[in-house]
Each structure stands twice: as C-alpha cells, then as structure tokens.
Length: 214
Image (tube, rainbow, N blue to C red; front, side, top):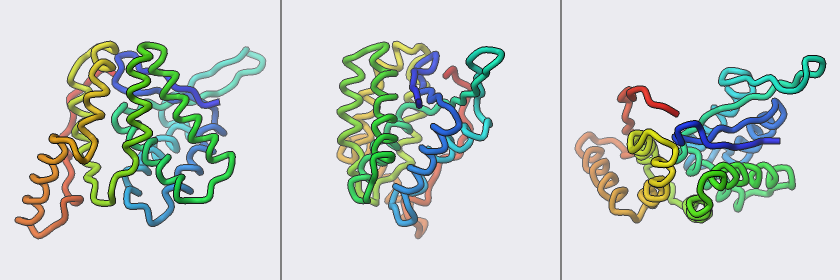
C-alpha cells in the first residue's frame, strides 16, 4: 500500500510503496493525463518521479525478515509541486471514465497527503486538503512555472519541519490564479513574451538551486 510521510525537514512528502503500488500509480497518471491535457508536461512530472521510484532510481528500503525480505521504494517530492499535481489529477478524473482502481489510486494519494500532515498538525492538514479540492480547476493558460518558483521560495522560507509546514497554506494560496502574486508574475511574463514574440509558457527558470535539507 502506498504511504506518505513528511520528509525530515518538511520540504516535501515521501511516498513509499512496493513496485506494484508505483506501477499502478504510473499507469493511472498517464491514463488521466492522456495526450491532449493542457497541463500534460507539469502533471507528467509526477509520473516521471513515480517511474524513477519503481525502477529503484530513488531510494530502496528492504523490509521483512532475512528469510522473506520485501523491497520497498520511496521518492521525495516538494510539497507545492506534489499538491498541485494531485489536485490537477483529481480534476482530470472528472472528465474521463474511471474505474474503481483509478479512483482508489487518487484516494490513496489524497490519504497520503492527509496522513502525512495530520501526524504533525491537523489544522494545516485540513487547510491543505481544502486547497487540493479547489486548485485543480485552473485554465489551460495557467503558468505552471509559477509553481516551481513558489517551491523554491517555500523551501528556503525555513529550515525546520514545523516552520515550513506552518507557511505551507500561505504558499499554496499564492498559487491560485486570482492571487496578487500570480497576477504580477503573469503580467511580467506576458510583457516579456510580447517583447520577444513568444508565449508566456515558453519561459523557464533554469537557475541551479543551492543545496537544502529535505
């Protein structure tokens, strides 16, 4: 069964499970995203991490006895990015036929979020889950690059789990397209794109991040 817990310093969530947990989740993500999703590249970022996890390219944990060892895999994903991806997946599921297996994967992801946060602060967990239910209904013009910028600011806003989680709801609020922070970012990119004859979605920040504690 897929499980979720906060990373040691609260930068993100650690998803853990066996090969089949990640394999099913990988298939579910690709089915929901399809080929025509407006947020395809952004949401498939989660599928990429899941694929890396199930192939043993992230972290491998051996459990069980010496006689009957079990292999489990895990992957760490920054909170703002992961929460936005899960919210968008839930929105995509509203427009495609889904069976119980797909719905189970989505509920499992949401349970991973809720359980991970409840372990430290139930009030924050409630706020975050409310945000997850609302955010996914963004338009095709939404600039997902803003999510990565907020990820960076979130990570460097604190160094402890408690400090980061306390600020998480505030950072998530900024991601709404009607927020003042997003509107400023959107205007800047629109003006830059107009000047260069390109599209706002074409711009990405490739600045290398300093090291940080997960």
